[in-house]
Image (cartoon, rainbow, N blue to C red; front, top):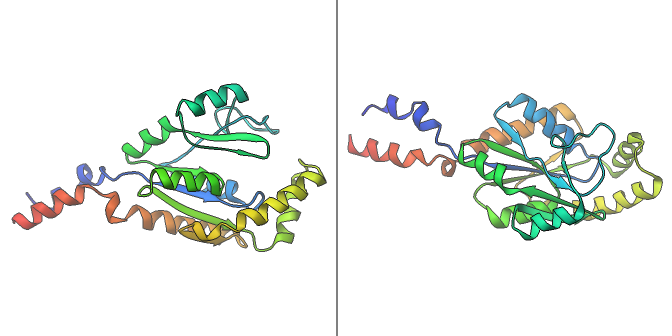
Length: 218
């Protein structure tokens, strides 16, 4: 069997997908970065989380979040239907298991827009599949300015988010990569580089076992 045949689509298609986790303080830009990353990489799948909070202006059920009642959310959580879930700002957030596992098995990559708690839980359950990236703002002053420009929250809520931002940033050392979002285009380029490098990791290509065995038999 020739090497050209072994390196063809039938073998390359067996790559296992990865979980690309993007975390940051609120307002640091991870949601916009994840949206642009997916737009540039059509084979990426966004993991849509479930939440008990009410939709913000412009958000759609099933696209931005699966909006659900707290009682229903907890029923699903205790039934083991979430990959990870946590309570943040008095609301619950969780990642449905089914779509994620299906995507990984099919060789598709899944992007997660979650906090450090979710990232830690995902890593505990699937350490070989998770790639963690923490997005940092260039300064806390700029972060506060971004939150104010949203015009969606009161000063009290913004102050609470700033305190939480410091708490979240304290967990940056748990991540595989850190990107400072002081230049959006550059930050996006770095995320693309991380994604493409991780896709080449040996352990994500189980077809290599058969390829090398065939090489050794030549």
